[in-house]
Length: 423
Image (cartoon, rainbow, N blue to C red; front, side, top):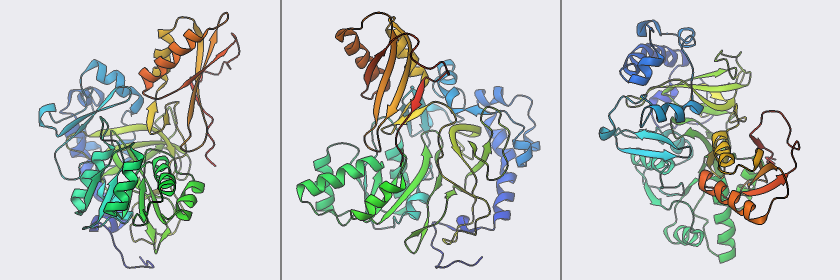
């Protein structure tokens, strides 16, 4: 394959012949299925499956879908991981608590979340210094970065989220070359640095996750001193799934798949693979010895990038078009998932609410959550304050409330509606 620049990848796996990669992944499937069945949850889900027969994509597509949206119920029935983890809890490195609550494991192997690949593609190198602005509190994103940095051999400033002035001061004093965190928080840091008159020009690279990154915001970062901005697609249960690459400072089309996932794009609600290039729900089968996932439906929509020339970066894996919305109503607000079950929980706390819909509006870094509530009679300030407090307690996010007359909300089954401006 001809590329326009010397190939510079984390390892040789990324530049394998695509047919060799496919043969290797399919050859590994029977062992993955057999190992997964040693966990009681997978033993139930895969009951009657002949592990040795699952050695092709067609065979894989016959297995049942397990949905991310089902994790809470599975975990409630069998703590902590719904019977889907092979490794006992005490032999893990960490256990995380994501909103829901959903419990996520982390094993002890190097770069367990496979985050070194997106970091390397974004320009992180041995001997560098990055500022890690993902939260270190309960959720795994910050530790994904830590694992990737350890594999690459660079140092980390464990900044976390918040304390904007300290963030700016650390960048000005320590001169990290890379920011890793959400797009909205980097914008806040840049605006605060401008207000403080601080020099943060050392930070030339950024790896973004947990939020959408519209092209308008990427251009804003370039115009404000961060020319190399990359997105990664990851989740708290799977880790890294896909990431952007560049050649000569120019982004390559699509997002490159991770080397340890088998990705399917399926018709939402059916599990049936769509035609190559069609939009559907992302379903992942993950080669992870501690927490194997078999046909795990993420709830995210995307499509395979087809009829595109080989990536100029030299990587040969399949690519997806990136995040194209949600297949369900679960919505990410300020880097936190908000579930329909949480909205129902809020409604149950307040018997005066007849019907409710959570509407998310605003633009990037300025998300606004408003719970529209149908109520009988005239609501009062105390009722509004109580509902606002319930929103905060249940979702861990600030929200507003708006009262509506009975029959005002559309009868379309929506519990959460995303009306944000992504332009």
